[in-house]
Length: 265
Ligand code: DGL
Image (tube, rainbow, N blue to C red; front, side, top):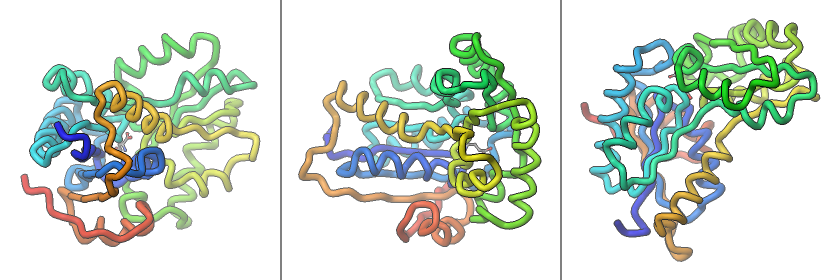
């Protein structure tokens, strides 16, 4: 596989763009492919089997486009599908992501950590194992957040309804004494400015986008697959939903406009 081959990144929708931004910041020479499965968003309330099937289809598509590595820029898809994809493609560098329990447990002073994530992530065996491994010395309060993903998909990052929804999810965590909140879904970093207005400055907000980008770099180094310094960056986008809708919010969430192709089923 050529070092100049692209990296394939996907999410249930636009949330993974928060990870794509970190990947681009960390690895500015890499060519990027991004699939938003917006025709099937949200993944959070869907069965693991359904998410595994979608992830397989999207992975196949990205590999057909020549991807040299895959990033599951979605916590919910990772718990449902990363093990299966690693089994199918044992030679391929594959990066998944999970809520940042380890750094949050290390950072908390109150000893109480809150996790905002999807229902699918919070009820998974993988998340339970993460708590067993890293959170035995702290109290972890979990909060599923139905509805937030849909707001971000619509490009609504600060309206009164999204503010009220977020406030309703955060208040019980603050009342429980959390001084550290994990943003355990890739859509939520886009709501960080709003979240900052709702919590005191000394409450830490932790997400995993930058750590995922660093892990991707390590894996590409191990596989001797980093793009050469001379390579020029490019990014291509597909959506299984309405390409025009993604095109419209790319400037807001990705930072620049780009054409979006339809992901044909
Ligand atoms: N962005 C995804 C995550 O990180 C899932 C959101 C959803 O589709 O429910 O979990």
